[in-house]
Image 1: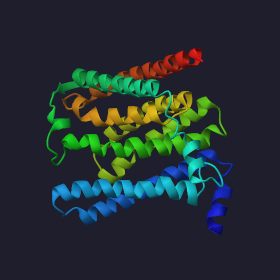
Image 2: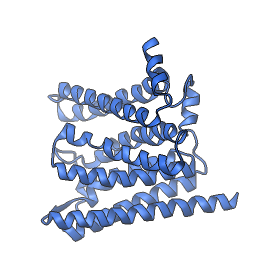
Image 3: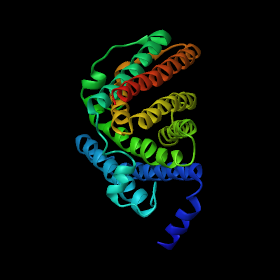
Length: 284
C-alpha cells in the first residue's frame, strides 16, 4: 500500500500523465484478456463465445470497479465506492428521455455518415445477417448486440468517467474535451497491436474515434451523465457491421470520403449536444 500511495502522490498533480498511465493500465488488462482467450480458444464455439463475454466483464469489472477507484484511488483520493459512482456520474440518469434521445440521435448521425462514406467510396452490400445472423468467424451476427455492451460500458467509464474527471479538474473544459478525445482515439491503437491488420485502416480508426470522443466528452460535460455517451457508443458499435459492409476498390477515395463524413458528424454532433442541452437549460 505504501508503493500505491507513492504512485498516487506522484501522479496527483499530473492529470495528463495520470490519464496516459490509466490508458496503459487499460491496455495491460486487455492483453491479459487476450492471453486468457488463447487458453480457452479450443473450446466448442458456443461455449467459447459466452465464456469470452464472461471473461471480458469479469476482468474489466475488477479493473474499473476496484483496481482504479479503490486501490489506486482515481479519480479522487480516499473515495468510497458510492462516491466513485457519483463522481463519474454513472448514477445520474435524469432527464432520462433527453439523455436517451441525445445518445440515440448522435449514434444515428455517425451511422448515416458511415453509410454514405461507404456508398460513395465502395460497393455497399445491405446484409441484415451482419447483425441478425448466426455468429461465425469474422461476423458476430446477433451477438453484436451483446458483445458491444462491453466497450459501451467500460470504455465510457474509463474515458468519460475516470479520465475526463481527472482532466477537467486541472484544465479548461475545452482542453479537457480535446485531450480526452485524443486519448480515446489513441487507445484504439490496441486493435492493431492485438489483432494486427492494416496500419492505415488503424490510423483512420484513430482519427474517427478521436472525433467521436470529442463529441462524447462534450456530451458528458453538458449532460453531467454517462448515460447518453454509453447509449451513443453502444448503438454505433452494434450497428456498424450493417453500415460498414462494403467492398472498397479505391482506397484514396475512401480516405477522402471518410475524412469528409467524420468532419460532418463531428460538427453535427457538437451542434446536437449544444442545442439539446441548451433547451433543457432554458426550461430550468
